[in-house]
Image 1 (cartoon, rainbow, N blue to C red):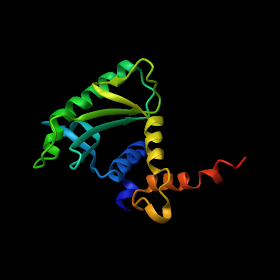
Image 2: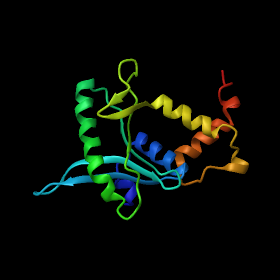
Image 3: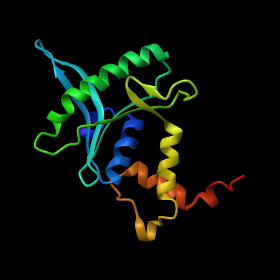
Image 4: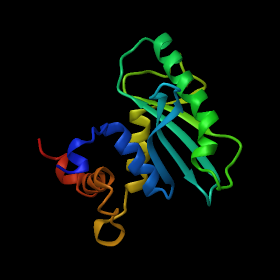
Length: 170
C-alpha cells in the first residue's frame, strides 16, 4: 500500500494547494499545531503558502461544511489564531512578512451578509474557480502546459482548452 492509498485527501484542499504551487508558492499542507502535553494537537492548518518574490504569506482554511455561521465563526477563528501564532515557526529561517493573508474558502456560503469569517476574508469556491480559469484561459497545452504533477489544475487546463467542444455537447 502506498502513502497515497492510505492518505485521506480533501479535494478542495488539494485544488487550493495545487493552485498556489502553480502560482510559485512554497506550500505546506495539513500542519498539526499546538502540541498537547498528553499527546495530539490542538488543531491542524489546512494550507500555508509563501511566495518569497511577492513577499506574500497566506493561510487558507477550506471547508465543504453547511454549518451555521456561529459554528463556523468559532472554528475558523481558532484556526486563524493558531495560524498567527505558529506559522512563523513553520517557516523558521525565512524572512516573512508580518501580516498573514488568512482566508476561509467555502462551497456552501454567500457573501451577502458575510465578507469575513473568523478574522479571515471569505472566498467562495466559485470565485476561486473563476480566478483559476481566467488565468488558464489561452494557455495552450502545446506551449504552456501546467506541470503534470498538478493533476487538478492540469485537468482544468484541458477543460479550458477544449471548452468549445465540451460545452457544445447538447
